[in-house]
Image 1: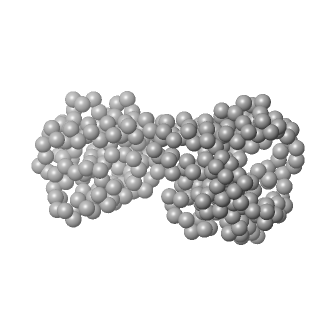
Image 2: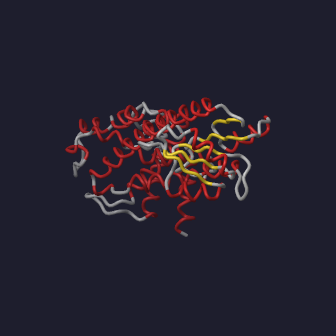
Image 3: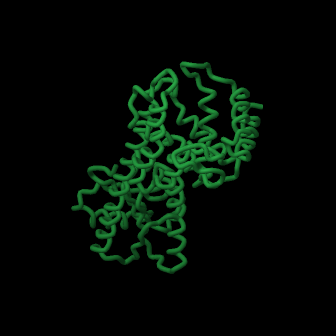
Length: 320
């Protein structure tokens, strides 16, 4: 969330430039901080994340382009708006800045009103992003609340997310795919928040009617997460992780490669982790025993055969 008093970090090796900007922003109510080079700026950012950075391009020790790349490479700081204030105004310099992660440019000499307007616009965007981040955090907290209902599923989502991501890496998938698998693993059962504890925590076998209620959770979970654009890539995982390769799953009875790849991965890993977790009606199975069951189910058509081979190879590598 953006600070009540926005923190603006001014990074410039020339003290007179920093003082000029501080004078321009003196009546804005911002918490103004300063650094004379990129390394000092990184130390300040580690202490407290600013809401916006005003950055010079050419500095000793670490220039503005390198600092911008460091900021964008860090998950904690990658959304900080960066305005580069520079005398460099060639297209090549601007392209270099954009590639480093700079959001906006102000060329020296600059208009006081232009600088203030650009800062205001980017802080407004930062506020909107912070609201989205907060909404996302609420949804992930809901997923944890589902898991916390049942002591036997403690840490299931984290284990599932980790193994699904590892399988994605084993398959050679890219970073975006691995992020979808990690988030999908955590959020796959979020729809169970709407299922009564009487059904969700029932120690014995579910009745046919109770199972029909349970089968609604993928659709409910999809509806919970759908309003957030950042979670849209994860929706197929949430909705389709109970589909089966032979078409016998739910909610849509998808089969084969019509089931999204990420959902096939999470579904298989979900089964494996559930088998290796202690339940009231059976002890946890060993990895070997769980894989044997998954292999038999693959032969019966429940799981993607190629994905199962990869999971088996990954776990052999992990436990060898």
